[in-house]
Amino acid sequence: MAEYYTLPGYRALLDRVVAEGWSLRSLADLAHSGGRDLYIRHDIDAELYLLDPFLDVEESAGATATYFLMPESPFYNLRSPEGRAVVRRIRDGGHAFGLHFFGEVHA
Image (tube, rainbow, N blue to C red; front, side, top):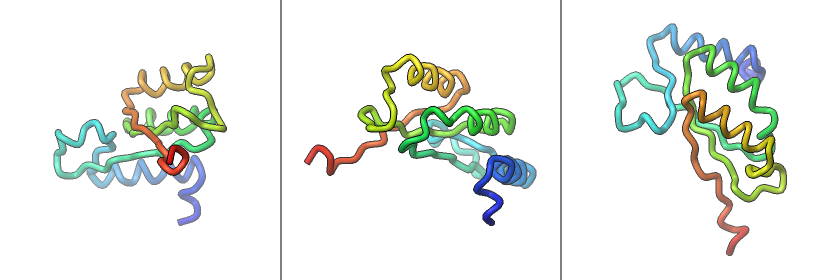
């Protein structure tokens, strides 16, 4: 199972799931479920600028995912040129967005 925590392992897992007849979808597709759908989500805590390899793997597998991003993060800035580029890549790949929010920070 530890091999799934590498990019080649992640790709192998996605390939296996697809070979077994599952569709790889984002949560935006939830209302259109076909019954054998696997919904992929990622909570992006600190690795916004390291997403390209994950996006490459998912796109080559025909997968879409939901990326939960933090609008206020100590680790990345969605408004920076780099942050906007990553957001565009996620959007252009057909992926969905969600809000990654820590309520205790605002309590």
